[in-house]
Length: 388
Ligand SMILES: [Zn+2]
Image 1 (cartoon, rainbow, N blue to C red):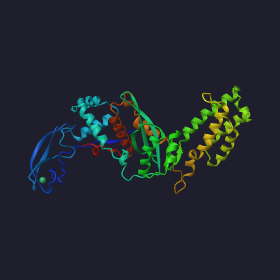
Image 2: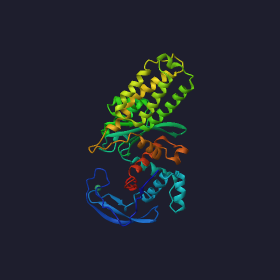
Image 3: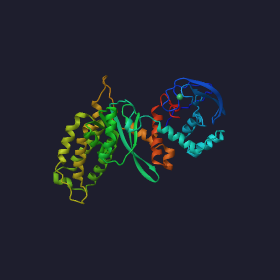
Image 4: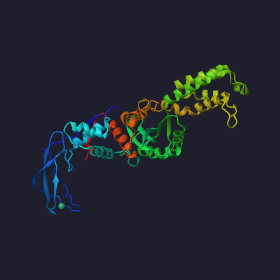
């Protein structure tokens, strides 16, 4: 996990003049400073600042104006920012209280908790109802993971901009079937106007891609790994000579071994034009019979399924090879690595996941807050924008 966080500052001499009256419905626009009042604060540098009491010319009500970095609360924005920063770095709420306390800054762990939650609530965008205002991208990467919360595993969906890795949304999912994935993803795809969905090779995502009319890139690393493992396993069974199911479809073990070797090589070269070759191999096994109910799938039937699946998958596996920008460069790299990296950095963030997030809402909020900090890695996240 990498973070770049900019702390709010306290500037006792910097005031913004009031612009509207605090009384609801009062149209007052002019205010007279009446009195300077001392205010004790919890801060790393200033034990006390001066606030100004203003009076509304229109209605006569009075209110206070505080210097930059101070609100009506006792704790300065800088200290709230420090609390959020330490928490994001992996300390528990109680540990943040201890660290700040040892520096002479008195803030209870309940206040630390509130500072973190309130900062998390202000994270813009990361809710599907209101995705980053007007943000557009051509491709969305999606993945599902889970976090442990109150002793229960909760599925979490994460959606990223697949062209640059920015996190778009982190949401609790009711489940991982195709309908539930679609209910989660379709509004996101619509909001950012994406044409392409990037995922691992789970079937649910293929259905989402088909039903929402989006092209799909299935992660080449996932497919490569899964295919290699299957090819090795099936080749070993062939070499052992114990399965004779190929006899029925008149395919020799030598032929099957050669086909598997070809598949392994094609799956790593991933040329769009090789799809007919996969179809050709599939047809050799197409007549393998499905074993009866409760019977184990024999070698011939497993070969049939493997070749059929990879033949059908081909356009989704090689999509990135055919999708280029105006200069002829590939837009995607063919993997779903952005999603996996985001899950590793922002959701499975190692310190807290071991202890288990306590409350579901707060767990999600913290994931979103860390991801948002990640989105702002290059310029640094100004915590002042999230601290009340
Ligand atoms: Zn007024």
